[in-house]
Image 1 (cartoon, helix red, strand yellow):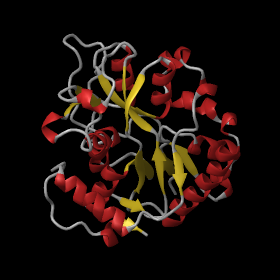
Image 2 (cartoon, helix red, strand yellow):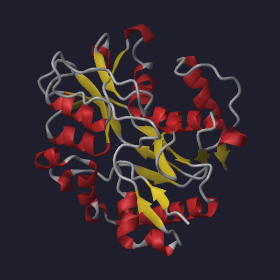
Image 3 (spheres, one colour):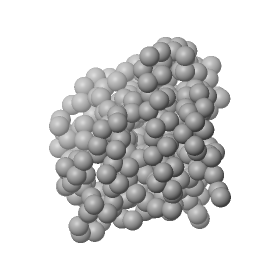
Image 4 (cartoon, helix red, strand yellow):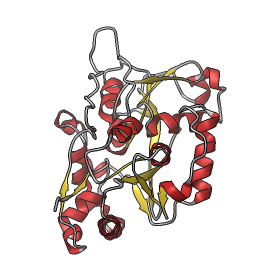
Length: 295
């Protein structure tokens, strides 16, 4: 019988659950899957930092990795991508929990960009069909018209971190360890883009294993809530080594927080209506909560 494959998601909870033995306590025979979540036949995007002529666009992101089939039994991404992927039959969404991740649009300290209004016509670096993409639209639509919002799809969180540090892009959306790195380097948050994370698991995964995984994460969340400083060193697992000298881990916040409440049909339906309003994906007709979400 194969091991239950887990992919950590720029947060502390999986690392704490492993340290404490919670996955094993809950009966999981598991392994961690590290690196980009590539499916069969999918290749890594071209690196975007330090290229002649500036960053190139990368039209592949969280949804595309789920569409291709992620190399794990359970993983996470923004709830927009997860709900769409599950509705398209690329796995099932767990309906008994979600999480909230602090996120924001950051710019260099010397930048003249101060407010959301200053972002009119300014390129914002985001990841394609990923949390940074959707949360930027959700945040900026309250201040700017769609025609005034300009996005540039420049890869994953560490790609955007590099581009900001190298001043190759004026603004980018970052979260997790990358957000705290930006703050410690003096970068300024222009707009908050805090967003919701959903969980996707393979249709072939054992549902009892999935439930055990979440029981372990709930125990880990309680530990983090009591004393997050004990576990912040795990953020270094989410940052390439070249960034380690830039940060003081104990100055980081606790990051993403798991919420053990239902991802409801109302939330699912509202999410799909909002995505349709932005024409983020081709119209595929009805989206069934009952078949896409294990509630």
